[in-house]
Each structure stands twice: as structure tokens, then as C-alpha cells.
Image 1 (spheres, rainbow, N blue to C red):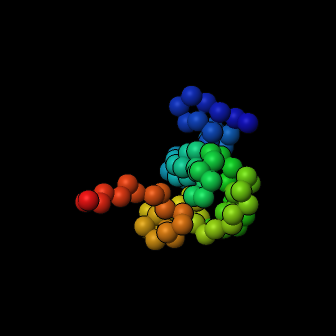
Image 2: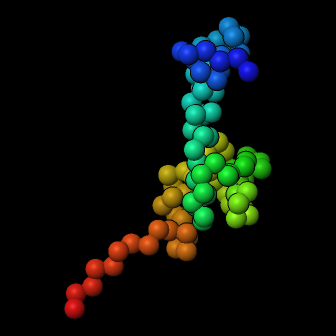
Length: 93
């Protein structure tokens, strides 16, 4: 695959398509790297099945997310309780 220091993985396109579309593709491709599964928290095991459908290869969970990212900001807010990180409970005794 073509790659250069200044443009990264979109260097494979060379001078084709113009600078702006290549910058958009670069932003999308960099967001897709390093995503974690919301259930098992394993790194780089998510696979995009279709637009907005993601599957974790390690635990097998299938969930809806963004088109290019597994979790959107709104999706993190509306995450089911069993997938949210447990908060430290401060009870007065």
C-alpha cells in the first residue's frame, strides 16, 4: 500500500481525487483504529458488518453504532446499564 510521511495511509490515492476528499478519508480511517468493545473492552477486535452494525470478534456481541465509529457520543450517553462502567458508590454511614 502506498504511504507517505505527510499524508499517511491516503498516500495510496496519489494525486487523484483532490486534497479535501483525501483528508476526509484520512480522518475516518484514523478514527476506526483503536476502538474498544463496549462489553469486553478488548482493543481492535471490532469488525464493521454493515453501516452502523458492529461485531466483536472476541466476545461475539453485535451492536449498533456509528457508520464509521463503533460508539458515537450520543450512543455513549444512552448505553445500557449493564455495559456502563461501575461508578464508585459513596454512601454515608
